[in-house]
Image 1 (cartoon, helix red, strand yellow):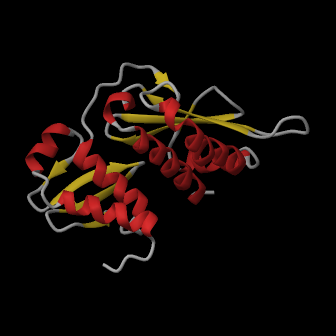
Image 2: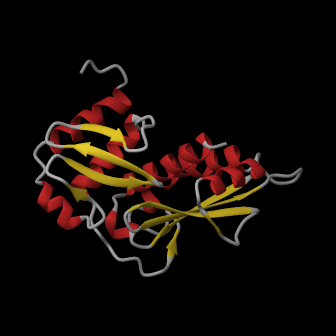
Length: 203
């Protein structure tokens, strides 16, 4: 593949190479939500089912729609390669509260929190309608807030507050506590990015 977008295609190509050596039986044992039929893995991300062939990588959406963008595909590859099933203890954590969160908080704030605030906090009604269309569960926080099943047993909440004459719009993203052990910090950043982009596509 000729690389044109290094920011997206280089990491994707790297993990695509690692994926070819993945042992499917090990991945299924480690990730109990993933199934394998001898040719493809099946995984659900934000309510959409995908089939991922192995060892030669290819992805298809089982609803017949478009396949996700490369950053999302890279996230799914990393999920199959590195993540694991971790029980949720029922608590929610901010990005900063999890391992390495303090180190990554500045890029995370710009890439996720500020983006969410100005994408959704200026259009709260449209945000609410999009989340309802996605089947998310409303929560009683913020001017509007919703809970999503991301992948496996990992959940995320996104809360938004509308801006006014005195204060700019604001947003917060909360992660189920199992993210702390099941995902690296950079994957938690990407998870926030994916959630925002997916909601935006429904607006």
